[in-house]
View 1 (cartoon, rainbow, N blue to C red):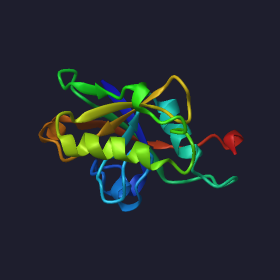
View 2 (cartoon, rainbow, N blue to C red):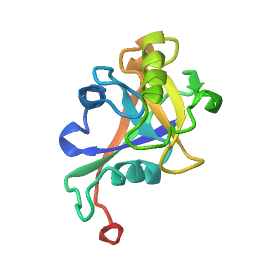
View 3 (cartoon, rainbow, N blue to C red):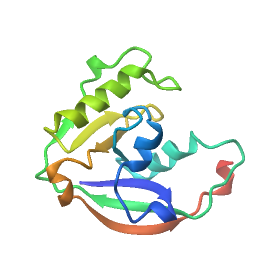
View 4 (tube, rainbow, N blue to C red):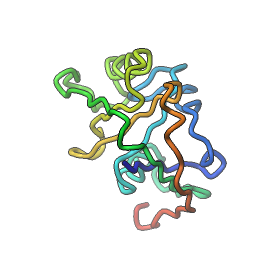
Length: 151
C-alpha cells in the first residue's frame, strides 16, 4: 500500500514521529510518537492546508510517497468507538486516547482512521516504535508547490 505525507523539506528524509510527539494532535497525546500519513496526495495536501493561517503559502515542501508492505496487517478504527464530537478542533481527548492505546498496544504498526477534514477518506497512522516499522520505506520525495489559487 502506498501512503503520502506532505512535509517541510528538512524533515522529508525521516519517519520518526518526533514532530507529532512534540505537540500531540488528533490521534496522539504530547509525548507519543506517531507518523501521520494520508491515503492519497490530495488528502495529504488538505490535511496540511487546514492548519495554515489564511494567505500563508508554505515553501520548501516535499511530497513523500511511503510504501507499507501489503503483508503488514492494518488495524481499522471502528467508527462506533468515536465520540460524537471527534471532528472538532481542537481535537477531543478521546481521540488522542484511542491513538495512544494503539501505540501502547504494539499489536499493529498501522492504524487506519477516518479523515476529520475529508469525509470518506482515510489517514494511516504509523507506530514508529513497532518492530515491523523497519519494513516501511520512503519510496520518493518530490518538491511540492501549492497552487496559489488555494490561498
